[in-house]
Amino acid sequence: MSRKELQISVAHNKAELLQNVVLSIAASSSWIETDLLSLVEHIQEELGKIVKASDFYIGLQNESQDLIDLYFVNSDSEKKSIHKQRPFSKGMAEHVIKKGKGLLLNREQIKELIKERGIQHISRIPTSWILIPLKSEGRTVGVLALRSYDEDNYSEEDFQSVKFVATQVSSVVERQLIQQELMRSEDYYRSITENATDIVLILDKEGKIQYSSQSTNNILGYKPYYLLGKDLYQFVKNPVEVVELLLGNADTHGPDATLKEFKFKHLNENWVDLEATTNNLLNYKNVNGIVINARNITERKQMKASLVKAIVNTQEKERARFAKDLHDGLGQVLTAAKINLNIAQEELKIKEGTKSQKIFDTIHQLLKQAIADTKTISHNITPHHLKDLGFIETIKDLSLKISEATKAEINFVSNIKKSGFSDEIDISLYRIIQELYNNSLKHGQATKITLELSANDESVKIKYSDNGKGFSYNTTSQNIVGIGLKNINTRVKALSGEISIASEENFGFRVMLSVPLHFL
Image 1 (spheres, rainbow, N blue to C red):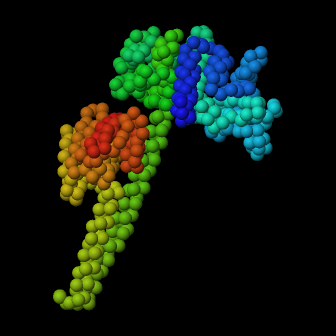
Image 2 (image 1 turned 180 degrees about the vertical axis):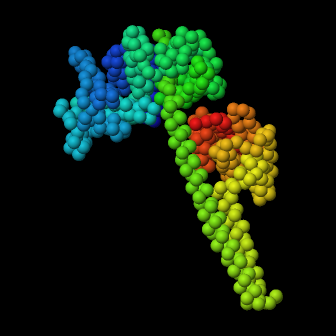
């Protein structure tokens, strides 16, 4: 075998060994149930097949108590493995956790780092040290470390091998911590859930309610046993979206800290706003479900809506004041200038066809245009037609003018018989439609737009679509992008309404929104 072939064979064997070590560590979490130290011992044993170490440890940050948990395993079999805690301070492990970057250090580099960073180190300085951060959801939660007191330093290849294994170690340790937390006694678990102010629900993978905490009665009016075995669908608004939001992918286990908002029907038929986190424990035999922790945010949302409403109303008042100043101030000045120009023309006896007459005609045209522009700007700032024509006729007029100015085909349909609603709803819906038109024409470059308005005794609805270029929008993110869409969303929320946006690149833009006729 040639030298090159030998090198390839060695590299192949090393890669295969690495893969086997990772698989063994991954499998260990299924049979090592609650003893984290035993898991660390197993990781050290497997990792020792690749990189030798005088001692090995895993440090995990305990943020709630500002501590670090250290699990030490010594290569000398006669020395027992230990678990100890210390304040999260200025040790080498804490340094790596804070920085979130791995380190490969020899003795001189260790001394230099200790001196430069003020790191506390009381034991014998090793010959070589590998420290790799352990991460969960992009956040550093701990460190994996190997120390050698032999003469040889760790190599870059050793460092990369440990780094590769550490990726699997992060997920295994995280799962083990979750298992430890969930393996508390049933009495302790029940005492927490039954006395919690938040709602705790457990759903099966089909969305049926398997458990309901006592707080369900306090917040939603239902006795806990009433909900058992019933589908979540029948209690939430927009059930398909909500169940997908809460259940997600049943194959992806573990906690999801993302806050999810949805509406749950109270026993008295009112809607209660809830904010929830989920923890998929379908693969945990003592739970076998998806745990929903939800709190009542109805009052908070009402306060926020009231604040947003006050801000929007203040903006409208400022717009109205500015429009009035523009119309009564600049508009009157321009009109006066035009009158005085006519008087000057007569006093100076300007003759037809002269150069002076042409100059006066030009000034006349400019003043006429300035007066017209002032009226248009004033109208755009505050639509006076809403009071004169009513909401529906004003929207018709707006649609016609925009269509004529842009050559876009606007199809406006409405089944609303009355002229409008309250002043607040009229002005807000007018602004929303203005912004929708602007987005479609300016950003979407649409040539066809459809606007449908409908209303009943409870709400007014807008259905809007265009054939523009669209944009990539993720409906599950619940994030409104773009200043125009944020303004629309703000106005809808100020009216205690709901909005749904759908768009794809090259497939246009669609909006559906509903605003209650009786709101805060």
